[in-house]
Structure formats: structure tokens, C-alpha cells
Amino acid sequence: MAISIAMLVGYFLFPVLIIVLFTKVKWTQKIGTVMMAYAIGIIIALTGILPSGTEAGAEQLASWQKLLMNVAVPLAIPLMLFNSDFKLWTKSLPKTMAVLLGGIFSVVVALVAGYFVFRNQNVPQFEKVAAMMTGIYTGGTMNFNSLGLALDVDPSLIVLTLTFEEIVTFPFILFIVAGGYKFFRKLMPYPDTSSVEVADGEMHLEDDSFENYKGMFKAKTFGKMLLGLLLSVLFLAIGAGLSLLITHKLNELIVILTITTLAIIASFSKKIRELPKTFELGMFFILIFSVVVSSQFNIYEINKSTLTIMWYILFVMLISIVLHIIICRIFKVNGDLFTVGHISLLCSPPFVPPIVEALGNRKVLLSGIVIGLVGYAIGNYLGVAIAAILGAL
Image 1 (spheres, rainbow, N blue to C red):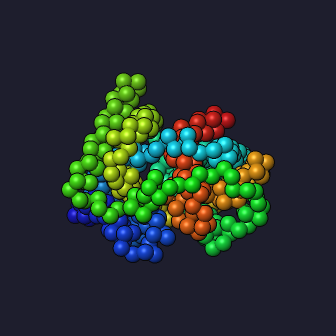
Image 2 (cartoon, rainbow, N blue to C red):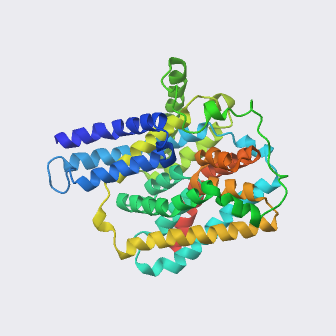
Image 3 (cartoon, helix red, strand yellow):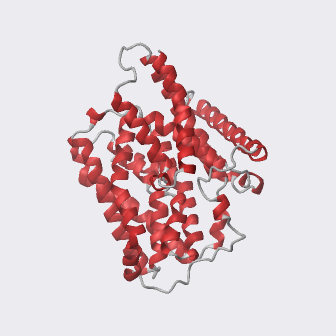
């Protein structure tokens, strides 16, 4: 029982430790907070110290884990969407739309094609794996986790899928940062006429970039941030109430889609959009979820069928990149806009500023962020649709 209580406390303290490391130690920023959270959880799981089965405290720990998972993501979604200025879309130009729609189309085609290629390999909950991959490749980890929760995916399968996704995606990110973007410039050597220059006063990247945890606990900031949390709790209550009204029980799918819709609507209010550090507070809840779910990792579930997930993800990545390149060449999108757009869909908006820095082209910054924000907004809906369609097939 003592270990269970200690682990419950750890589920809140580990994210704090991760944030401190991310803020203070520069090399951890290359790893990312979510990957550190999953790594900590997997290490805990591999030590075997957590009670399981009929051991004392196992049932209580499982109950706490389920509660934290069911609450953390629904609270995180509105908080991470509140700061999203979807009106930025009106400042982007047609070729940005071509990159966005072409990227989404490429990902969906690759995911569905891969499903039919690998579906006879006995992958557990394969249509739900495809749905989670739809979420992460259009909106990032937030949508991946929320779809895993909404579709009631086994926690070990969530961890395995994300682990394999990182194994496949990380080398591609390194390739881009190390100069691979020059390859795309040669493939798409079109004039840079579609991107929008961001004025220094328009977006404060140094002070207000994604996952900037500095100053969260200053009195003035903390109070306003808590207003965002209260609003998020309200949306969760509305989602739960709507679920009870429709199904007479708590249905995670209805809750997730409800709070996503309410958060997008709320983000059009300037007062809500300017609440400070709500994105970072949302990330804190995502980190809690990540540690909790990864601490349930079971290494014995890695077998031939689950390894198929890694080949599926590799297939999806390669096919989606090729299709996206073809579409962008048709619309004469330049290589830098393609690069930042594809990375934004693949990895979410927090990855955009580092990629822009590597490109040395600030003009594509706004387009990349807009693409990622729209991905955030539609990822949950698209993932649910993919799960329903593939499940029916």
C-alpha cells in the first residue's frame, strides 16, 4: 500500500521534475517533455516495483491510475487550445491551405492503405491504433492521448504505439535539422511567395513560445492561469453532463469531442485566448497522463503482432511524405513551406520554431503554426471518424 501511495505522489512530482529539467537543462529540450515522461513511466514499469495482480495495494493503484487518466486529458485539451488563435488562418495564403489539406489527405490515405496492408497480422485493436496515429499525425501527442482515452485503448498498446512512433519519427526530425531540408528545397525550388512574415511585435516567440514554463507561478500569471483551469473544469462538467444525458453513463468519446468543440469556440474570445500559460498547464496534465499510462507498460506484450505496428507506422510515414511532396509540387509549394507544414502536422506546433530556426526562414513560421493549430482542432474528430470507418470495414 505504501508503494501505491508513493506512486500516486510520484505521478504529480515526476511532471514537475520533467518541467524543471526541461527549463534548466538545454539538451532535454531536444528530447521533449512527453518523451521524458514516457521514459520515466516505462523505467518504473520495468523495475517491477509496482503492485500487480492480487498484491496488496494493486487494486487501489489501478483505481487511482484510471481516475488520473480519465481526468488529466479532458482537463488538458481546453487548456492547450485556449491560446490557439485560429483567426491566424485568415492571414495565411492559398499555398498554406494546399500544404495543410494536402498533408491531411496524404496522412489519411497512407493510414487507410497501411491498415489494409497490415490488417491480417493480428494487431490488437488495429483500427484504434490507426485512429491514434491519425490524431498524432494531424495534431500531435495531445490528440493521440485523447483518442486513446476516448476509444478505450489498452494502456500498454498506447505506450507501444507511441514508442514505435518515436522510433520512426525521431530519425526524420534529425534528418531535417541536420540539413535534410535542403533536399526538399531541391525537390520544390519554387519562389517563396505564399508565406507571411511575422512582425516582431506580433508573436513573442522568445517570451511566449510553446512550452515556456518560466514565470508560471508569478502571482499575476498564476491567478489568470487558474481561471483557465476553472473554465476547463466547467467544460469537463458540461461534457460529462451531456454524456449522462445521451447515454446515461460517462462516455469518454462524447466527453472528449464536447470539450474539444467548446475549447475551440472559447479560443475565439480574446480574453480567454490571452490567459497566460494555459498551454503549459495543459502540458502538465498531459505529462501526468503520460507517466501514468507508461507505468502500465508490459514488455511481454511485445511480440510479432505488436511489432507490426512499427512497420505500419514506417509505411504511413514514407507514403504520406511521398504523397505530400507530389501534392505540393503540383501546387508549386516551396520546399521550406512543405518542410515546416509536414513537421507541424507530424509533431505538432511546438516543433515549428526549432525547425524554422534550422531553416533560417522566419517567413514560414506563421504558416507552420497555423497548420499545426488546425491539426490540433480537427485531430480528434478525424481520429474518431477513422476508427468508426475502419471498424465498420
